[in-house]
Length: 614
Image 1 (tube, one colour):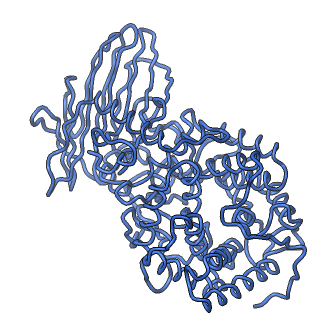
Image 2 (cartoon, rainbow, N blue to C red; image 1 turned 180 degrees about the vertical axis):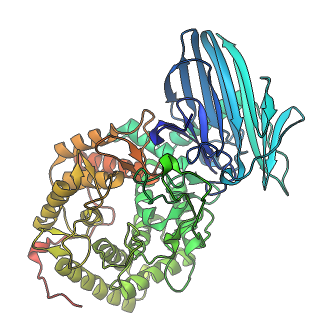
Image 3 (cartoon, rainbow, N blue to C red; image 1 turned 120 degrees about the vertical axis):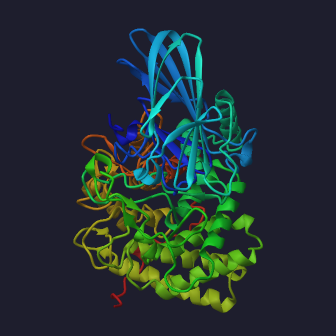
């Protein structure tokens, strides 16, 4: 049996890594050391790459849900002879609550099987495979644990259920009657220079994880529209946070395809600066400043004062070299190859990162007074780069791997960087700096208004002097470059929706194989800001209805089949949900003021449009 569809999986997290478990009771993904470490279960990418399954022997149907306000998953299996529940959780440090959740997680996966009615014959299949399925470990019993050790990792499986082990896998059969429970824990530890894997009680892990997640969410109460979806998305984003550093990964998985059978199968277990300001905006709505301050500190330490092209992504502890390579021994999800580890986008020039950094700083301005010297150095350097490099082509926010272009969204984000720096004024630079930044900001704006607009299309397009539409231009009103009601911006929103939208799912460009979820949320915000509040709300509800039964969203959705595609769950998608819900809430309250918006947005139609400057 394979791993099923991407959206068939539930998401477990512990502040260091994540596990995915499908509705049939199989754990098909876990990299226990940290998000971007080698896997011990990778059945998502190849049937032979490791899994841990507990399920009824015969036919069954399932219902599942998270325990209230937590990332603890409960799946109920109903059979002809009875029903049974399996509750799964990754352990948090015992007693950890609030902002301590996830800081020192013990790296234990707990599963509790409880009989609900009748009796249900069950089976277990445990098949760990180390180093992305490359290595099979001999299973041996030691001190009441079934031990698997290979390469730099060790796993201890503990249970009272009798197991037979042979050839690197274990099997078990047992019957569960109403009221009975069977506990399982699987604990990880590095093979060297560390103690043995933790020994924890499975039910205590479940109870403690539920209490820990609830305590964290209790500190971050959102009272706006679509409260349940926002709270669930907040938990998902927090679950994708590497708590020791505060960095949020784009997704906990790698190489899940954007198109079935296609080659765009990238490793997303890293941290993109591009996502940064959107993440902070979302955290601002649902979190307190502890997470935000930690994020900004991580950014400052990771970026440093390096010369040359600014790295646009990092490892969870700030690593820069994320060199990509292929795992040719893996078949890939739905035979989508190559399977990739690492991501060579770290080498690219993406000029939008300047805007994302300064936008995040401006969002935090009340908590950055005075600006710490190390933060100020980074913000000043990013502003200088925006002023110096805005005219250069780059790979764009969609990380094109063919050729660099003059992407409009990159220019707009350079404008954003300069605009926020000007607003910081002498808190960030000298009077001469501010005057120079002001001149550069206005120069960027004139260039975008002139060369980014296509008369033939009637829209701002993806790149200078191009007629190709791109959903990234929807950022223009969201960062305050133009109001959504500006005639040209309004025309752009209309053309993007007409030509790139399919059943409310917005493709990034014409020919993109599926709808890109965060772009669809950007469209919702733009429509609301342009005065189409009711339709924006309808699109929001249609889009969120395409999440899976647990409220989880991947990077993309196929408009024809509704199948979720790409890495899963996707932080960007859940961040888009939070921000769009917040925008609709703010508009209904009558006070939508872009946190970093210009004091006065001048419609493009009222500005002069100088000749293009080449």
